[in-house]
Length: 166
Image (cartoon, rainbow, N blue to C red):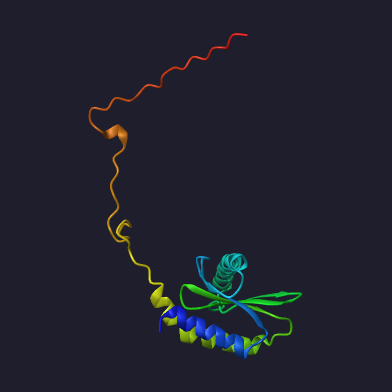
């Protein structure tokens, strides 16, 4: 079973077990949408916002030195939006209805992430394309123009400005 099928099955199971979850978005930490059951426009925006939220949460945890980032929760008048890391480079975002049991939801979402995270990470491994440079190759050496042989510095051409006839 590939990662997308596995993740889809897990998310459908989570929504079946937790009816207070009204939508799910799976996104990369770069903010790009992987899969969702929300309308496309909302999902694309939510994926980008989840990545920004993850970035801020990750920075805060590093600043206060309290361990690693576990989740980001935004409480609204109509429910919550909760973002969990799913492996090294993916995020699981759940949109919930009001009155959701966040503690139970947290345990189920983390279980989903534990089961699917490795498969998701394996399919999102970065690969070098033929046009990409090898990141471990030595840097090119550039020669300043002043040190090239037989090169005379160019003089700026004087531009004369004349007032147009009236």
